[in-house]
Image 1 (cartoon, rainbow, N blue to C red):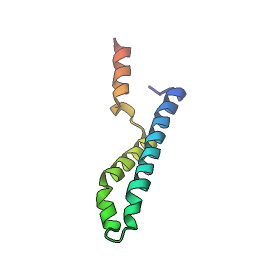
Image 2 (cartoon, rainbow, N blue to C red):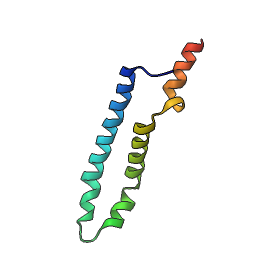
Image 3 (cartoon, rainbow, N blue to C red):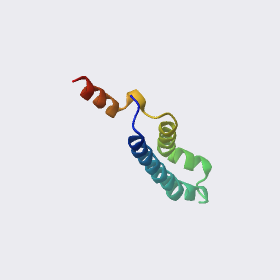
Image 4 (tube, one colour):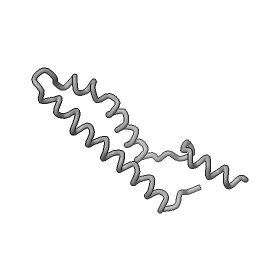
Length: 82
């Protein structure tokens, strides 16, 4: 089943919103750590592990999409079969 164009836009809009939020969080909380004298690159990288993991997940979903693994795919197939 192919998603309608409107439904695909909703998913993409949500993913872009999460991407903007995540990039803002990295820029406002992690980048200033680079310029503190007692901290540096490695401190920032270890502190931002979760942010980077979420960022790569969002980018993956933007490129590939959730597909048959997604929860709403299972709901839509359940509705069609009953």
